[in-house]
Length: 437
Image (cartoon, rainbow, N blue to C red):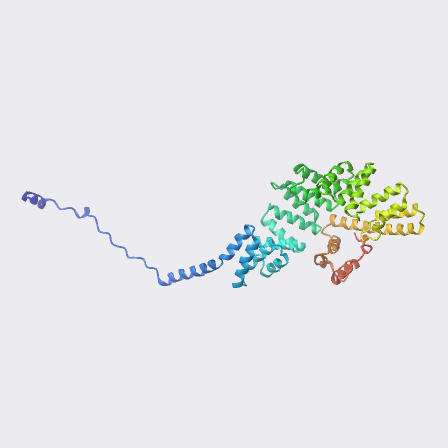
């Protein structure tokens, strides 16, 4: 460096202190207490270890959602070998058992650990419905319907369960909600028609099924096969007197699948239209499929009587005489045959028997009307219990009857309760107190 340069540098003014950049002080590192780190690690372990151990349960849950209950059941069973008391695993097993058709074992498991989730409650109701435990299923279905409104499967199950317990107005209400859902109109109207048919409202049944026919002309996608839909629709039309409209539906049912019942009703439809030959042909075909078809035997007996062939008429009816479900219509025909054949004693016997059968049928109709019109009344519950017992469901019958069993209860109630307790024959319909309702 030259002397002049050095001199200039030495003579340069000093930089002010304020203009100099201050040196930043290094902040001390934050140190977490050892005890806090230990707590975090401990909490992580407490949460992470169970989460890791329950991987098979998450796998089983996924398999169930994918419609693979058999595989889910295998996974859960392996897990339960290591942790048999895990309530979540037991509940998952119950759900899988329902899906593979083992409803009784599924219900036992759910009752043991309880139902904590919507899926577990659904499994409980499905198992109960399969086992025809209507009273147990209904309150849970009602609760789920409030929690998950407008669920198609749930509404369908709720409607069916209410009907099984005689609550037809509420059953129809649920069916109407079901029918209002997008994509469920045909099945919903089918369900409404079935409910109206079961409670004797054949006109409303036909109105609902007419809508079904408009939505599904081939009867596909319903709760029942097409042949059964057309048969039941035809029968309902027959009961409303619309014979002409019924015949094509019965023919359509027979085209899909020949059935004795369909031929029996077709024969009756032809007979009422004056087509005697067609009626006889249909009834003969019915007996070829089922020799005990009542409509066919009664119809053929009437044709023989018109020809004054009383022996032949009696022969047609003979297989029906000793049936446990003998109808007054058969008894009346036998009474007429004996009278026209001058068999006085036999005519008197069949007259008395026919009157007895008519009284029983009248009582049954009155019992059903009480159930339909006053479903929450004492006698409606009693009669519904009687029907459940007839359907070989004594446990549900006892559940329904129990609240009305007291020392001062009507003798019919006590007789029914005793029969259920002893698993003995039910009291006869002649013991039903018609004067009480």
